[in-house]
Image 1 (cartoon, rainbow, N blue to C red):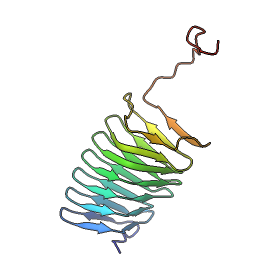
Image 2 (image 1 turned 60 degrees about the vertical axis):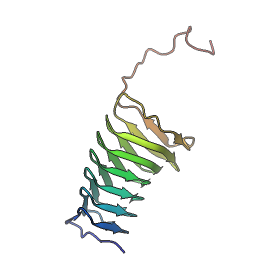
Image 3 (image 1 turned 90 degrees about the vertical axis):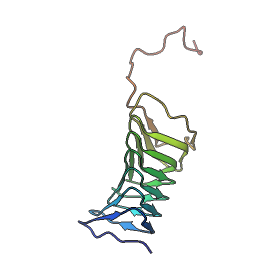
Image 4 (image 1 turned 45 degrees about the vertical axis):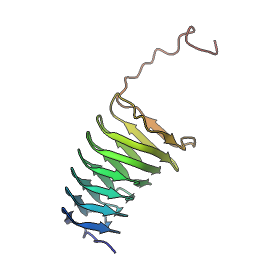
Length: 165
């Protein structure tokens, strides 16, 4: 069993350290530093993955936030109800599963491999460049893709551009 971070404290996984099955309760914080590796972490508080840090298969729930900084990597995260994964410019997320939570890709973030909508949730794209990875499972009510980086145009559809007119 991995580290259990006490509420109100911060724990750091440093270079050469691996922590599998850790728990970060509400009010707790975990930092995965350069050369550190976490896996199967349950995040209800906050987790920050710094440059050179890696977390595999995190479960982010109920107000938990995982921030993937520049040079950090998150693989296979499941973003459950009320959870949020924020990928900063230069950060990488791959094989993420949105299952009631929010995945936010800030301008310059990388979405490697695919993303899967397993249940209601939101994919937020802050930049103007769209990810090239495949988005799977986008079909149910409550699943949203928010293109914040694109300007809204309320002009409507021109008859010359509309296939139904």
